[in-house]
Amino acid sequence: MFQRTIICLANSRKPPSGRCIAGKVLNGADSGQWLRPVSARQSREVSEEERRYETGERAQLLDIISVPLNSHSPLGHQTENHILADDYYWAKVGTATLDQVAAQLDPFDANFWVQAESTYHGLNDKVSEQVAAGITSSLKLIATSNLQIRVLMEAGFEGRPSRKRVRAQFGYHNQTYTLSVTDPEIEDHYLTQAEGVYPIGNATLCISLVETWNGYAFRVVASVITPDRFGG
Image 1: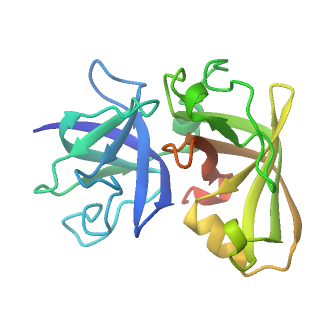
Image 2 (image 1 turned 180 degrees about the vertical axis):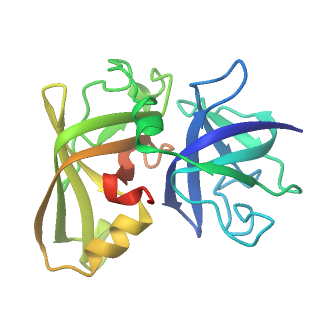
């Protein structure tokens, strides 16, 4: 077992009933690198119990966390995955400031932002399994100045009923993206709002390229970080 201290930059929903936690390492030789703690289960999600601190609180976005880990366990383009040591509590050692998060922004990476295909309701939001095999990372932290949150009814996959969905639309390096939002706080808030487009403007986004499914890997917005999400 070994430990790494990370700024939690993603705390997003992950089927069947857990979270995808990811952040940047703050200590040691890996400082500045992405790390995604995952469970040893086939689904790899982090359960509510696994992200609970000894105090009873659960790990949240922007927490600074000491995470106990067992081993590096890359999975395809998700090279950041590490199996968590689930016998040990995580420990909160602080809360990130806006400046600390800004210092973690990633430079443009053409390998990650390879030309993508689009789903029916998205834009530049999926890459084929073959393309994903050549991508060497699955997480990026970016800043955008023109974020819009789109809340619309979308037809279900393979004939399933329509459901209200939350997507983020933004520009980055002369491309426009419309990606599903998996940040639960943002989803919960906007699902209570009327259908429409909600301009946000400046925001920091964690973009995740999820595991391949049905021959594709999908880009999602795993967190939407705006100044109001910092305490104080």
